[in-house]
Length: 115
Image: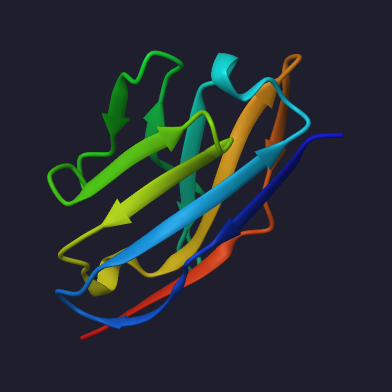
């Protein structure tokens, strides 16, 4: 059974930082590309960052240079370091993985950035 558990969200002022974590179980973690998505109120869920099994990373244009995705295969955990946060970064952040051609999602963690 695949489980993804996010943590690290919260309320922060604009310009501040947060670090999100996603602990995965039920998958062979070091063979999986891991993704972070977010969903702002009234908007569609969007891909924020992804990291492949060999550490190749991709980012949405809106977060490039401010966010960093990383993984620790020994801990089955993926991270999202978010710096220089802006009110537009507010939303629920979800960890995602595809396993056996099926997408799995965590429960999400709320990030709120005040101006």
